Image 1 (cartoon, rainbow, N blue to C red):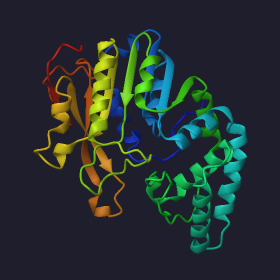
Image 2 (image 1 turned 90 degrees about the horizontal axis):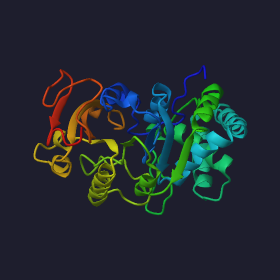
Image 3 (image 1 turned 60 degrees about the horizontal axis):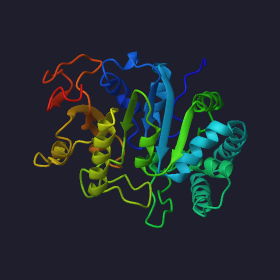
Image 4 (image 1 turned 45 degrees about the horizontal axis):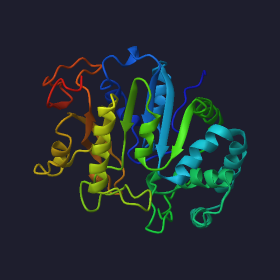
Length: 323
């Protein structure tokens, strides 16, 4: 494949900006794993997936999953029906760009959102509208209400670019080698085989009452869900597999908040720098830290336990048992 595959949707919390930091925290010997299996139980925008499959050819099996039905429909449609999807995307893009003013564009957005929420669309139309809403809503945010209806406001975009045909074809080709699942993250364990690495990018634990952007399904991902995810990590480690997990750094907001330090006290915790770009108030955007939790000690950047790099603060506990 000559053209590099890359995410075809915008996704809040997407890992594109953190790829380099995630790469150096992979297991030190990852490229020596023969016939490796790579599993993402919360695929989201897929930045890490596209990176891993293009940078690590020893991955012979890849599995992605998400509980968001429309997101998974989007992945399967890009994989299996890209040549039918492209003209549909081209048409809706041209329609939006041809509208005479912003009022007309907003009206089209609201009409598409209403039709999308009727939930009776075929995969091509559903994915076309998913792409459209993703590129024209506020900041690419995907959020639904308790009834499961998409309710993000219009993003006031004058132009629209969502039909990069060459990239879509490259993505489709890459996804042909990926098993796509839909459902709860726990169902992915049975797909682990041989040397397996799980990468978890779950809905983040909110840093404040107003910072929750994880309502992309009608089922809330609360602290009980975070605990259930940790217990799932324990099970996969007991089965001999490895994991890396991203989440919010609660201590960055409240020094007394030790939720993740207590929950993952058996594992290694790194802090990585990320950018906040969701807030409508530009003054509240900027650099924050996120947690990167892993079940193994030795990483590709060859840091030993308790060594600190200039950019990362690393905590390693019960060292050695997950090497």
